[in-house]
Image (cartoon, helix red, strand yellow):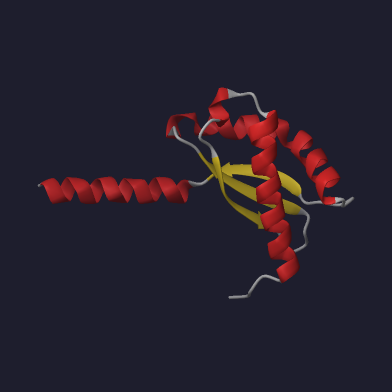
Length: 115
C-alpha cells in the first residue's frame, strides 16, 4: 500500500472543502439538501478526480449524481479560480455505496437482535 504525497492529499482536501461550499452556495436543486461529499480521490496522474457523495434518500441517488454531473463545468471553473491553478483534475461524481452497505448491515443486525 502506498501512502499519498502531502501535495496530493492537500489538493483532495481543498477540492472537498471548496466543492462543499460551492454546492451549498450555488446549487438550488432540492435534491442536494442533506448531501455530503464522503471522499475525493485524485488519480495518480492528476487528470481525474472521483468525488463520492451520499444523501438522505437512496432512491434519489441517480438524480443527485446526474445533477452534480451537469454542474461539473461550473464546479471546475470555480475550483480553478479559487485554487489559482490552470490545470485541475476533471471531476466525476458517483454515489458512495459503502454507507448504504453499512446501513444495510446495521438493519440486519437489528432484525437479528429482535428475533
